[in-house]
Length: 66
Image 1 (spheres, rainbow, N blue to C red):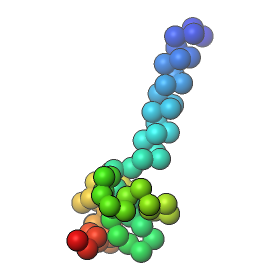
Image 2: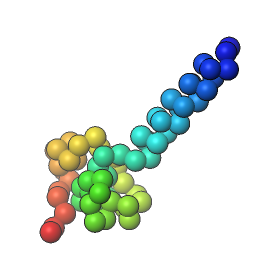
Image 3: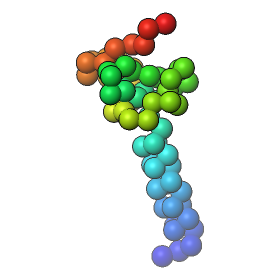
Image 4: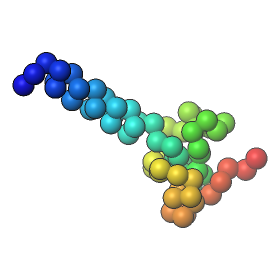
């Protein structure tokens, strides 16, 4: 295996891991959907990840109160 291939493969694995730890939307255990950049997104540690707010709401989640 070439060194370039190994480096590229490692970068892809790292990007995949980052995507898994930083979803676009987190649904908290209490069912609130928090979008990336919203007030409680970073504080939400126990969650189900979603690609969009629409997916989160369709799963039974709700939008946060303003």
